[in-house]
Amino acid sequence: MLGKSELADDKLLNELAGEISREVAGRCLINESLARHTSFRIGGPAGLYVYPASVDAASSLVQLCRHRGLEFFTIGYGTNLLVSDDGFPGCVIDLADGCSRVVTFENGLETGAGVWLNEVVRIAAESGLAGLEKLAGIPGGVGGGMSMNCGAFGSAISDHLVDVDVMDADGTVSRLSKETVGFNYRKAPGLAGKTVLKARFNLPAAAPEDVLRVVDETVSERFRRNVMNLPSAGSVFKNPPGHFAAKLIESVGGKGMSVGGVEVSELHANFIINRRGGTAVDALELIRRIRRMVLQQYGVALELELRRVGSTDDPEID
Image (tube, rainbow, N blue to C red; front, top):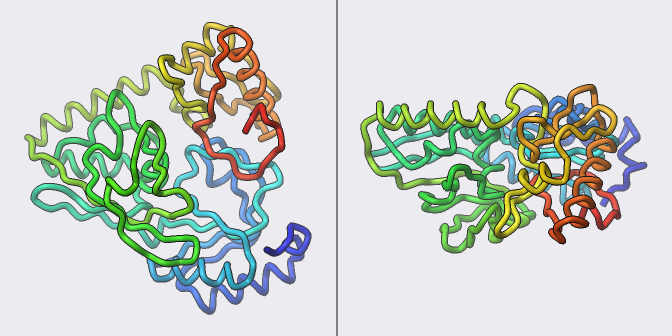
């Protein structure tokens, strides 16, 4: 892999960007701030930030990255990411352009991974297709939601899933059945190391007005419970077996705790909000403190739900 110091060389970055522009259909940006692409509004620059125009273009880009020893990862809407203040020196692949189509049919729909999940929920409801309405208001795209089996109010994105199209780390595209993936709570083991490109759902028919009513009620409840108008990465921790992370954090006095520009939400203790230009260092320190407090009082080790880009060697985080 190309090293961080090598990718700090603007000449090399421009050379790589030129090669990508020649060989991959799509848009390529250099030193793009990842804070602009994450809901937390935290993160340093990506050496290269590329929007492939199609699945074939995405596959070609992955193959080029591997050939050039360029580290890469795929981003959706950045709603569950905490990016290092140093950024990411490799190539970030954004599927918003190339995987953005939704098609409905009599008993379900097919959607690209780059589509905003709320848009898919709304299209299904307006088409008289039920089963996704409890996902309304979950921030993020289909691909990111699938990779962590997102859900709320007793529903998960995998509940009505049939199969997914994925791309391996070498650029190979294949189709996986729901059963092959092996979904469970906030996990999709069969998608590890893969990029979701497309998903198909079987959805029962229902009166559009009934489904839309549930969508609106669900969104209202999410706004009531959560901080939706301030930068955050959504739920920070998974719910441990037999517990709710938010209740554990609240019970140890976590609500309102702050480090630098970030703080634990007063409305929902499993949300960390970026109130005053917080940094990844701030967020990681606050996460450490919360985990220590809960572990000391309850003996429960909270597991991160958000995904980190950039690493530390601190076992209290990992």
